[in-house]
Length: 404
Ligand code: HEM
Image (tube, rainbow, N blue to C red):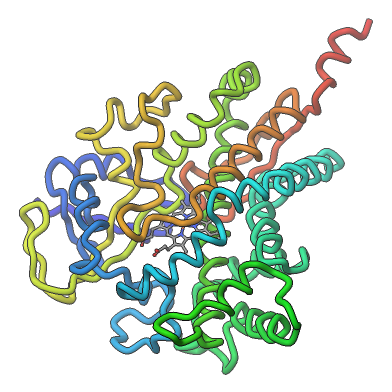
């Protein structure tokens, strides 16, 4: 007893997530307090119960957006995750229609061309940074393309992610009227689409044309959800991409195995999602007194739902701390959440990761770390730390092997 865990400890970005502590917590005190007074859930079975019971456990992004404990966030500023049923399901359909499998398939060529263009640019640099030059731009450029926006806005998506304004909403303290910047941008874009006789983009058109119970969505509601697409889809996918790329960088053996057997790419991406979950935890608010895993919870209690820990639960996985490409069911993890709020962007994120890895394998003979550089831990997706690499383009090794 007496264990505690702070999933927000910035030291985790430097020293790595303390997975040994999480293993002790799973064994000895599976639901333990956090320093901010929430409860951390570490076992997969408990995490699944909470993710599935959306009536008792409400998603609430208040703490993330500076609105912890604010009871009345205007309804038109609720991100999709926070909207209660049945409205949640109706609006979620629009997300599914925007990023579903057929839309994702249509993006394959764009992603391939984008990744190749970024590799071209990296090969002109003495010391490219796989984070800044590859993992970071891919999801931003993809989201700009999906929403039919000019590609240069992708730089702002990244900047807003860095400066923290991407997590704010109009009701967050200190936000200027009309802000945050991402909402000002989407307000402008929505007005532009409304001024056309036919919207030029399918996502805008879906949101503009939908009616729920006979009422169209208001401009603020549409802007809130477009904002949420960027917030939920860019930063997270960047995390997955830097994890796969850095792991390839740090293991020549892995790089060579994947290059010799491309069927390993999918299990590699899935094992990265499990072992190095880009979203380490999600927040829930307990709405009524209840019991989970033998622990009593009060109405109003905040929960940190430990996806990272659940994905390494020894009750669910053999050798959970090991990174293995031979798991029987590689997709059996909670990296994309679960229940009715499971990630609607999962197909898109997986496709980006598979292509990003495949293009590196196609275009490079090898890549290696730079001596003297301290690389961020994996998972360390929030750290924004550089990941410099020495890249050897495809064909170079063979050329030098055959030179006299
Ligand atoms: C590797 C990349 C990604 C990871 C790890 C990830 C992870 C997650 C997780 C864990 C949830 C559940 C949140 C909760 O239950 O509170 C979620 C929900 C969500 N994700 Fe993703 N996501 C990724 C990429 C994307 C992309 C590319 C998009 C959009 C283009 C997206 C949009 C969303 C949305 C809108 C929700 C809320 C769904 C709802 O509440 O019904 N995500 N994601």
